[in-house]
Image (tube, rainbow, N blue to C red):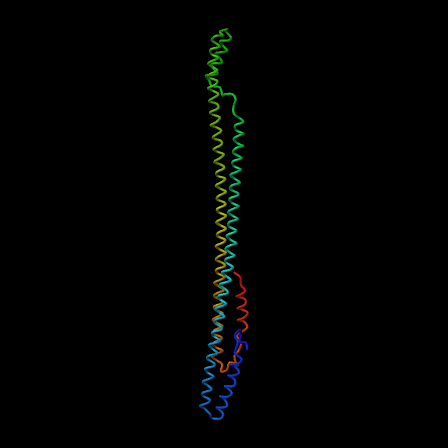
Length: 269
């Protein structure tokens, strides 16, 4: 016979029924000593049945709690593995983006430098000394002073080379400055990308923490509800056992316990 999810021993029940009938017969025939002995035996049997049913109930409840803990542990292993994979994939994506930007920056820098160097001046920016020397040279040529004009031209040529060198130096400095500015801009872009990557990672970890806490809360709630249900089952068992004289009169546990238990045990975290 099933009492809720607990089984009453049919052999014991049959013996209890016969013993109770014997007790009643002894009472009716005035054999009170035998009736008393039968009653004591009934009480012992009832106590044994109560302890057995209580033990079975508590064992089943302990197994249910263990099952809930096992399911939670298994799901958390999968959950953590899933999140670890998600974080690794995110880190890889960020690293690829960073590497891609660095490569692009190098290519942009090389192209920009090439464009700048293509504009390397071939003529100097003439200084005032050079221009003055050329005017003097022209004036000497006009008055047919060729020897002096040749000397001035040679001096102007030296100034020309100096001016060309100065022009190249200024151009190189300007190129370096422009390249430095480009590199600084690229560095800011890279730092911005790294900040976005770190921010995204932090948000990902916050989501993981939030979902972990939600799972922990569901687990704690399920355990608390299951413990409350177990307490109700124990109280119900105690009440109906204390109110019965014979095991055959036991009232089954409420179906609502079983439905509630199944609902709790089927919950996923």
